[in-house]
Length: 364
Image 1 (tube, helix red, strand yellow):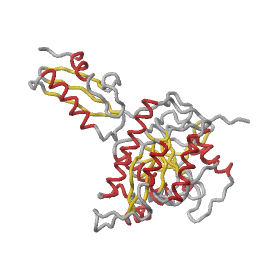
Image 2 (image 1 turned 120 degrees about the horizontal axis):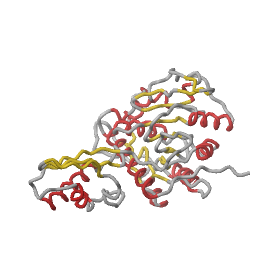
Image 3 (image 1 turned 30 degrees about the horizontal axis):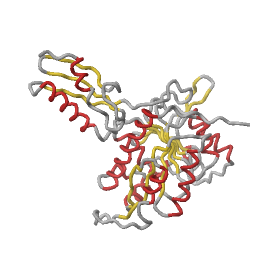
Image 4 (image 1 turned 45 degrees about the horizontal axis):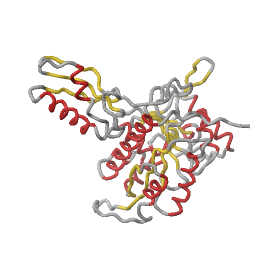
């Protein structure tokens, strides 16, 4: 029997993407089919380089083809990826596929630590990533990336000055901490802080990105409104710790994004400081702040639970030294890599099932 591209597509139309619940052919994920002798080659274009199910999908393809055409054929399957987006022809950040807000109801829950390690983990998985430190009064990104004292360069484009972001560990970075002296307090009124965020979004040369993360300040403030009024946000990630007081504030942060006039999809909840594990006893878990509070919050609002991040001394040390914990092998690396895969999956599911998020209109 002489196989053709149509034969291959017919067989692969039985193979589903486990997350999107549709077959690979109708999703346009099968490309470049070639038949040479007894060798068949093609590409499977995944929705993210962070896909944790790539081997499952590949094996399902081989199983379907072998079932139809036997074992005399050699299947050469190249797994690649193209991050999905619903931001077609966007006037602001036109080359940025997904904008993700990282939010928390209160301070001290490790939101910036989560943002930093999530950004680096996505970059480690092969994505193009940027990170905006939107906590204008308490910027921490320069310290956590070991780029304190560095200043971004500026280039002239027409009549406009464009800022070139700092790049570290494969992530493009922008923070007010790059533009002010390290030891100076930044005391700005709301409109000034909002103006700074707008500049970080529209006056920085972000280029082509799969994910632009925005590390928001705690609470619900002018900064949050400025963000949703400036760009359509793909979705929000809510960071909390397990204890009751943090969950009460996380409720408010989550509810803000769900208000009808804002209507930003919730990609999921991350439970930070979920348990303490001593480095020398990696199998032991001590639930210092309560247990599964973030998971229960996710269940309450029927949103995905993205995972647990333990409280470990090395995470604090990594933040202080500017070498993110996800770059070191061990329990924390695994936790953050799993988080990155979960976030990337939820972005792909969101893009396949929900319409583009609209910019919030300011009403008089």
